[in-house]
Image 1 (spheres, rainbow, N blue to C red):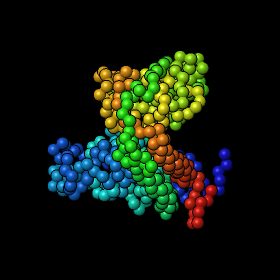
Image 2 (cartoon, one colour):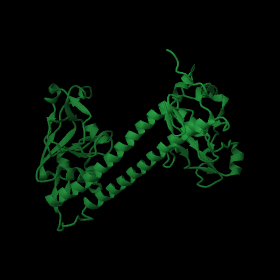
Image 3 (cartoon, rainbow, N blue to C red):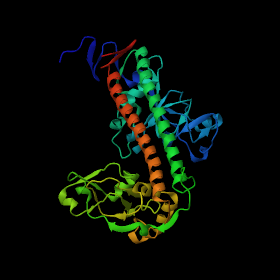
Image 4 (cartoon, rainbow, N blue to C red):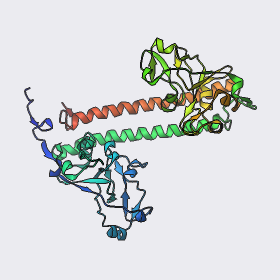
Length: 421
C-alpha cells in the first residue's frame, strides 16, 4: 500500500515523518520500588507518601497519585534505603495479578513506592509525561510478564517497548487535548456522584416518612408483606440457557449484579422452549433474590413495571402485589429497615436462602397509594436525570477512545486552529 506523503513505515506502524520510533529506555528509566515493612507503615503524616499497589484504588487517585495511606519521614526513608521518585513519574504494579489490571498513574509529588510497584522516570527534555501516560494506557503491560509462577515485569522488557514519539510541542498539544477531555469526564463524574448522593438522601427521607411531599399527611398503614399480595416461585433457566432466544428473562443472580429497585433492561433472553419451564411475569410483580452469599444482601428486590412478555428463573421469589405502586415498592423494599428484617430471616451459612414465608412476615409502613405514586415519581425522575448524565459520560469516554486512537498514532495531527486529517 502506498504511503501518504509525510508518513513513514516503522515498527509501530505508519507514523508521521517527523515522529520518532524509539525504545522506551531511550527517553526514560524503569526502576522498581523498595521494601516497606509493617513497622514502618501506618503513619498519616511525613515527608514522603509511601504508595502501595492498593493505594491506586484510593478515592482521589485518578490520573495523578495524590492520596496515600502511609507516609514516612526522611529518617525512616534513609533507614529503609527507599528511593524517592520525582513527581511526574509514571507508576504501575509490577508483580502479581495486579499487573493485569493495567493501572498506570502519575505521581503528584516526590514519593516512595513499595517493591510490588515500578516507576517510569522520563527525560523531560524528550518526553511529556501526560503524553507518555496516555500512550501507555493503550499498551498491555501484562503481555510482557515473565513466564514464572508469579507474574512479574522487569525493566529490560519494559525498556524494549517500542513507542511513537512526536516532537515535544506536539506531545504537549496532544496531552492537553486529552487532558481537557479528562477534565470534562471528571466534572461529569462529580455531577453523577452528587446526584447519587441527593437521590440516596431523598430515598432515606421520603421512603421512611421522615420528609413528606407537599399535600400529604396522616399516619402510614402498618402491614405485613404477605398482606399485599400472594407469592410465586421463579422456575428453570439454567446458565447455559440464558442466551437461548429472544424472550426477556431475569435470573436471581442478576437481581444483585444488574438491577436496582426496578427492571430497566434485561440481560438474559430465552427461547420459547426454555420459557415454558420459567415463570411468566405480570406488570407490577416484585421479585426478590431467594439465594445469596451473605445475609446482608439476601432478598434484594426489583419491580417489574412494564407490560410485555417476560420471565423469571429459579431462586427468585415473586410477590404478585395489588393496591400498591410497584416502583415505590421496589425502592421501599431495599431500604435499610426492610433490608435489616430480611437479613434476620435469612437461613444458611455458605449459601443463604430466604423463603416466601419469611418474606411474607416482613413488617411494612406504607403511605396511601397517591403518596406512593408521588414518591415513586420523584425518585424515578432522579433516576432519569442520572441516566442522562451517565449516558453523556459514556459517550464522551467513547469519543476519547477514538481521539486517542487518532492522535497517539499520528493518523490525525493537531495544528494551530484545529485538527488536520
